[in-house]
Length: 208
Image 1: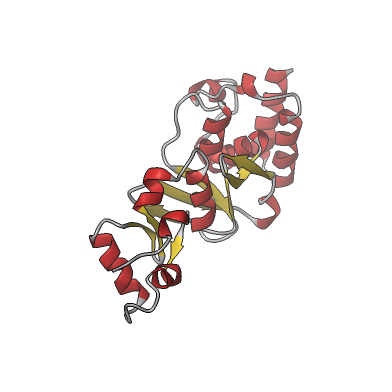
Image 2: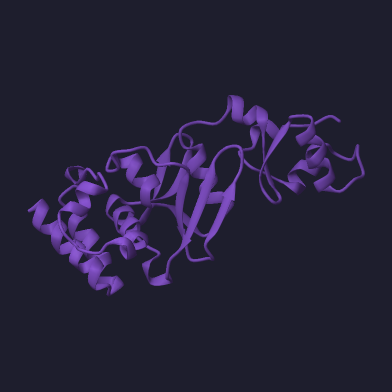
């Protein structure tokens, strides 16, 4: 089975896999994919999506996994612990890749990693930018929005809003800039959550 150029593509659909062998084999794309998986040529990402193992070995760079997170489930943007880790606000390395979406909550696990997607209401699906990382342009939360999203999903575990919260979660809030705190406050107010507004007021007090 001769395969053409799939190592150049960062993500493969069944149609692209079928096109890569031309008209040599008259079989369904899914069956071709299964054969290529057995031969160690491609890795499955989720149903209907794959990547060439040669691409993973030779072509991928620092932005590739974030790009993949964007592509596997749309619309979505990188946020929460993954973005906070990138910005140096999270003291510990985040596991997997966390994204926010207006679609249903979803989880994809493959040999590359774990890709989590949490639903958020449409009016809070904001605060992300198109960020260039390596060869890729990624939908990526700003530091303030990443912090908001992190607390938005964590808030039910918070019993008392005090300074110990930031210490217990080992957040490097000193890494926030002067514009990050007001931006965080904007999202907290838009959320109309008393707990989120209390977190903003506390953060504002700590950061001066």
